[in-house]
Image 1: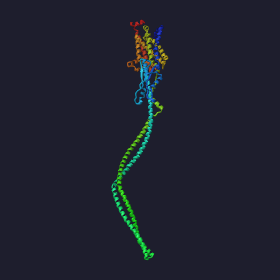
Image 2: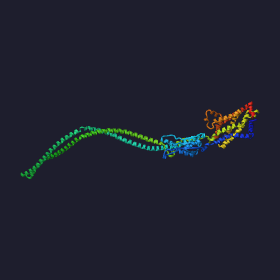
Image 3: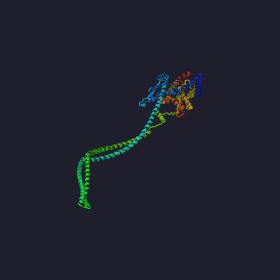
Image 4: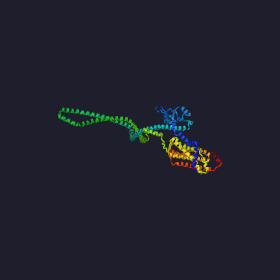
Length: 630
């Protein structure tokens, strides 16, 4: 009797009659009922969140007045109502509180009164965070809190991006304004640099003039000092000169008077001689001399008068000159007198001029020194103006000056600098597809577990007939394996066709699920063969241990440290890993470990069943009681 024949007999035993057949059909459908219905009910819950009622409370009073008035709360409320992500209802704070408490709303988001003002507080350098209130009630559904947290975070990110974009836009507009003002400042700096150069050149000329003034004023002061020392005795000397001039004038006037008297005497003499000539001529004529003789005598007398006439001419000329000299001497004396009267004032003026010239010289020296300092300052001003001009020019090139489109794009990038590019190597697609590997594995174990509620792990008849333990063990397993394959084929078809979960590699996935069923039936078969009724309990215990350690819902790395060895030791984790590859991306080399572990468990299960069959060949009274009861 071979193993196939033993399996066939067991299946024929179970299908005798209508009720056994219905029982077998029910057992075959158990994994389907467990996995497919659960996956169907949770296939895409996130796609139906628009049916989930949620409340939004807008208490925002806005910020600013007039053109600056903004109400971000109203904008957020309108955007949420338009989004359709949830069944949003705009209600009052009291209605939202009562609705979340009574289960009318899954959660509520409340925007406080000062929300907009808080968002714009940074512009007044009094920054404070703008908060929103999230109200949840886990008595409605424990996942509503998680969903609400994600929604609130999304709302927060959206508001932050919007406000950040607006703030960055204002910031960049400020840069444009700074660029414009800096450009004007740069032009002013260029003009300042040019003016500073002109000032320096003018200051250089002024410094040169001040130096020349210093030299000339020093020379003037020296000359006036010499003149002052030379004219200190001028008043006294002028007085002496005036006295002497008066004496000379007086003497000249006396001489002129005597000369005038002499001239008058000479004139009188000439008149007397002229009268004498006339009288002489008359007497000579009266004495009987002829006219010729008279003229001859008069001629001789005239010759004799020539020296007297010449002397009279010289006397008259000298008298005139002496009169002129006396007049001039008097004028000189008068002038000397005036000079003597003005000499003290002149002397004092020269002294004052000398003192002023000295002060001028000192002032010119100070002016020259000051002009040298001013020249140095103007040179520093030129250097500073050039540095200012060059610095503003360089700074102007570094200040962004963007157009409206570039500024808007830059503002959006600043507010949201990081974008997530989802380069998924494999994607489950839906929530149900993500859970499919876990529930298919669990359903396969449950299917193997319920099989041995009806199937006998080992054939007593074959053991009593002396059949080989290996043949008996394999024969007992094959009947469960055949039903297990039927279970997973029905399950796989329902999950992929009816539920609609996509499969990347259907053929390999079905083959892997069949291998999983063969392995699980071998394990449960070995437990039942070794421990009997206790083996069923142990199968349930292994189900629970794998349920908590397989990592079907969360990554296995998040398991507590005490459960991680169970994940590595039990087969369910490898089943889930292999199914994830086959459902989401297709067969890969990493699956060889999963397949190897399942094959090893399959071989271990059949080996344990064989050992149980060998042990069952030794009959005891205790072991016969159950068999006799059957």
